[in-house]
Length: 112
Picture (cartoon, rainbow, N blue to C red):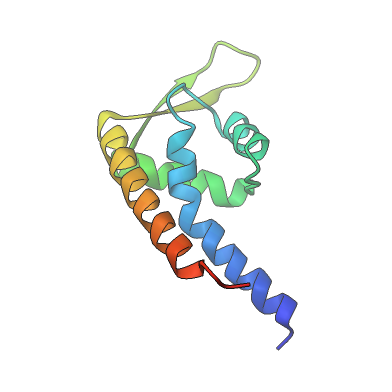
């Protein structure tokens, strides 16, 4: 197997594992799908529509996001916003992320 193929596969796994937290960090203000894709892209995380929309529906089903339809504009849009439970989970995930990050930096010290 090609090293670049292996690297790409591992990078995709890492990105997939961080996407929930990345999305939750962007949801304090209501966002519709495309605006969220733009916000994530602006932060350096590119995500496909076919990845994001099922994730948004799953997070809403889990109670971490709430949504409302806006039918006022030229086309209806579903806006998502983080719920109270989502804020709690995001806070806990951020703590876990910081601990994991510190642990990984310790393990990588001295490696080239």
